[in-house]
Image (cartoon, rainbow, N blue to C red; front, side):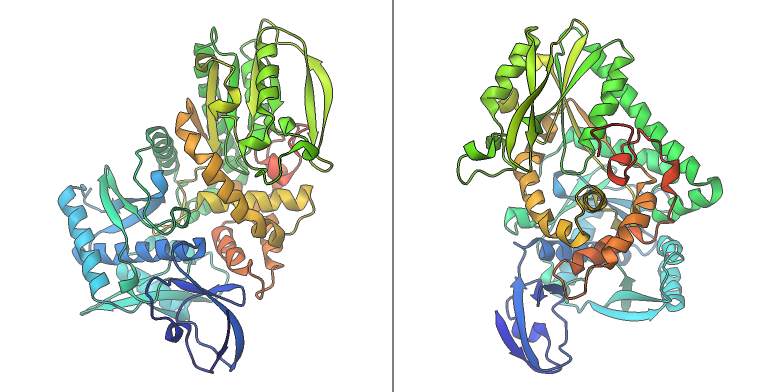
Length: 540
């Protein structure tokens, strides 16, 4: 809505409802404590927890609140946050005395958080020099933040602080926060060894806390990834940078690729263990997971066992544009010619020769190309966002399918209180690839990302636990590689643009990583799908 404001007036002065978390001012996300410098007319939209920008600020603020509550419960403890299953945040206590989590401790933290919420304490932001920030971090024992701040190019830093009785808590979460603890009355803490989980409202759940689902397969993969990163001291930005300084970028690349190769070999062994029954390997994952390169890599892995895989992309089975029912969501399974796909897969498995289609997204036409037949040592590899949807492969018995869900699952932190977002990492990949293959600028890619995310929640995430194997496609050197490409692209986004807030968040994700040369990345690496130079023809 259009509103005329006075100089010195704050957005908070216009809001009485504490369901409002932040505002969109002339298209830009701002905190409620934003003060107008001049009188004039502005377009102002108040955002509640049904908006993803608001829930992101709320989630960051909850991490601030948890950190403060833990310091009040036991000043000798700290916490590290990780994005985890069921859209929750995993909390692991950091202690010099090998502190053990129990239900009583989790209740104490939860009670302290509620006490702070009821106290309606201001959360204020200040701008100070790096030296002052380092001093405050040292006082609170936040050595992880001290280490990251060394890589900050600016000579100043922002901090948030909150006072309670004779205690002042300082922290920075690389995000705006709510203006008061009283806004943070929606959360659930649950023990989840060896730590606890925080559940918070989600925009895709209309601002409510989702029902908790214990996603065992996904949790196991995250735990393995986290353990590997910690064993190799690649679990934070400062540790990754120190690794590059000590051993060189090439060593980091080789180590990351070796981990990828080992997991790929493990997957190959699991597929071959069912060699007598498996006719089809289905690969699915959200946008920019690296499905195309992964399918190529898996093809050659299975060839080492004497198999001759036939690679098929579900994208080639879209209904021709002229035949697509009006109003069909292009991201939905209904946009795929399911009867035709099932018929062709059945014919292949029965040993018949088929002609594979090819879909042209520019003109919306489907053409037919090469002929192929499933030989005695052949296996079908299909990849696409709906590949794990049993409806699309209904003609194939379940015991003949091996389902693989892939996604980058970084268990890496900027610092203990700020985990690297899995979603933001994929967006960085997407920006890099779109700029190279489509000529799209970062602004355009960011603007369409919410639609991509909506499709993922509808069509991809519900089927991830159906997978027989979950594969983490994150490479620990990739933020270093992406930073050189993506930072100049993000810098082109004007502060007046709606996409500027996201651009600044993405810059904070990668700007602290030491950049590395792209020349040392292997030509068959999944990362080549995004930065270019892949040896696979269709991994553009």
